Image 1 (cartoon, rainbow, N blue to C red):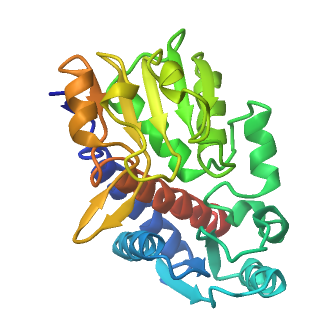
Image 2: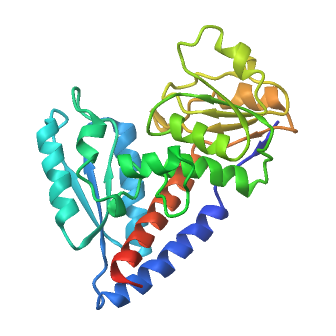
Amino acid sequence: MSRSLAAKPRSTALAAEAARVVAASTAARGGRPAVLAAVVATEEIDALIYMEQLLKQAATAGLAVKKISLAATASEAEIRATLQRLSDDPDVAGIILQSPLPSGVDRARVVVVIDPQKDVDGATAVNAARLAAGDLDGTILPATAAAVMELLRTYEIPLRGQRAVVVGRSAVVGGPVAQLLALAGAQVAVVHSQTPDMGAITRTAQILVVAAGVRGLVRGEHVAPGCVVIDVGIHADGDRIVGDVDAESVSAAIGAAGGLSPVPGGVGPMTNAILVLQAAQAAARRAGA
């Protein structure tokens, strides 16, 4: 059985840091907490569960939270206008656009109106370009990708010179994770659910990050003993939450020398902690705290 790469206690420490930063910015604003705004245009239960958890954590840190629920059929123009209003609102310090988006809506075309300093999930072209250039100083990173890296740092997983495989190529998670791993010195390959003989590649990985959005995609036969596996997936399965990794077979295959992030309890809470901290830091910058 592998060791568990859980978010706690590191995520708890990040939450405490966020609360400290929020308290300072709220004091600088005369006791008025800054707002973290989330725009949701989906009915997918996985996304709704995630957003409720995130906003609860943000409120616990002391931020005011605002959830704007749009129809799952909302147009690109409607979403863009909503984001523009929030970007123009001086009380809003951070903006999140929850995935997935309605059919036909291009994420890049709508997030362009978000002030990059309010882009607490690293979604805008400005922050993406800084990441692509390897300029991490002052760059707001995509929170899930940052959470993956934080887990690896927390458990002191070596990265330089290691073979890392990322399953999933989305601009939201897979792409940024691959970029961050490469910047840390890893040898990175990217595959996806339709890659022929995906297992032949994933079995070469010393570090495997699974962010395909497909429940139970990676099983024991896809991994080598001793591999460190980070499961980014989150799916509702009746009264359970499961990931992109079949935890039982993968844990057995990687053995005691390997590590597996749990679902729930791994990337999800670390992502929330980082998002709230990035929102807190955005509020502090705006308040001059």
